[in-house]
Image 1 (tube, rainbow, N blue to C red):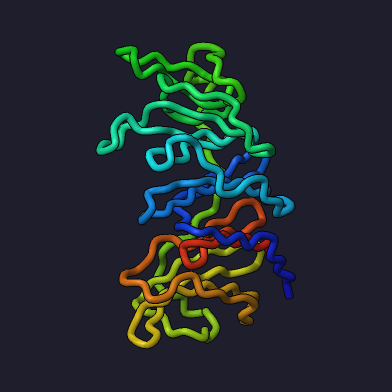
Image 2: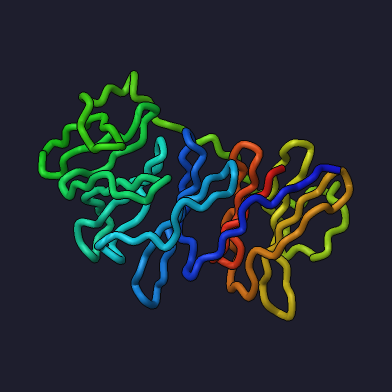
Length: 252
């Protein structure tokens, strides 16, 4: 039977709003929002050893900012052009291992992340001119070249939404509806489903080896509607959010 190792169980005071993984240094960054207080902070966790580099990290703009990208040990944050609009404007780069602010520029905006680094543009120029930038100091290296600076694709495995497989062993909770989130990895079957408990929806996570249930957890309780994808696989790590406020990572 496979030995599952819990390497990360990090709890936060607010809701885990977004996660981003640096595919070079294998660092998970999280955006944590406290809706009532209109406050946002950030965290950085090493996925290989479980070390938390920083937590409750804030910048001067305490609400109108969020995660833009992560690359080569750096978290890139964005700001907003206006409070009521979705347009991003301005960037700040945070070093994961120290939490130091490396640089900020309120005229630059992010276009996409390439295999060579972020592609940025000056929001004051029209039409925009796209440049490859050094994420560690914000300098423009050269003009963006699509044939060389191809888009970086995250090495993530996402579950599929499928009809409940007939060959699943009996599970502790009876599924609500006909669909589950399902992924096969390393001879394991990972299943997330919703069930009714005392008249309310609960979301469960199960890991099955052969016909044996070897792991289970409750992801959400007392929810009003079916939740989106419950987990992702990054390399050999199962990453999921529990109760909207805790990041858990299992080595499979």
